Image (tube, rainbow, N blue to C red; front, top):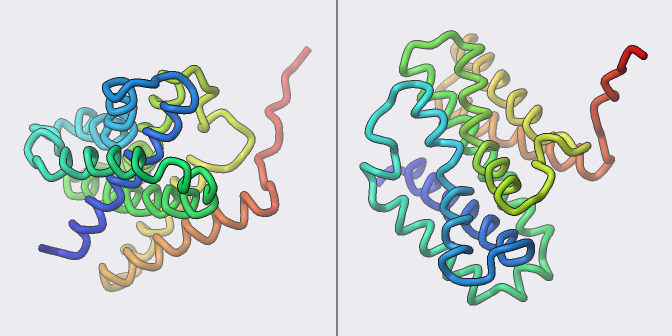
Length: 204
């Protein structure tokens, strides 16, 4: 089993944990509701990417291990709920790592379908953040995409960074690791120093 595949399953589980924690805090309280939100969080972005690319069957349909990862994430969130809430910084790093990995994985898959590199970067961003956006909508939260903190833009920048490394002929594994570290570093710095984009000015 390739290390990247293992990391993808782990990232899926982390997204499921994140979704379960948010669901239990904001709206859903029963096991079905929490599991549903966790499922959407974990597979929403990848499913949207595959639908737009015309890639069927969707990843979670053809690979049962994705479902096992989601269920494992929900169980872990239930057992260690109080512990996880106390260590939100740890969960933040796990969530960011998941965003970083799925950004690159999504970008690679789009490139394999022969799309323009710019479209591939957008598909990578969708893979990483759209599950969280759908989760926030379902739990009556302002989607993280529309909050002040930098999130989707960092994913998009990471995808472009990866494509740049590929363009100059960097070794694939090196590009993969460096791009993940790039997204992690920029996300941590952005949150620590509360970096945001300038407000969009309206004409009155």
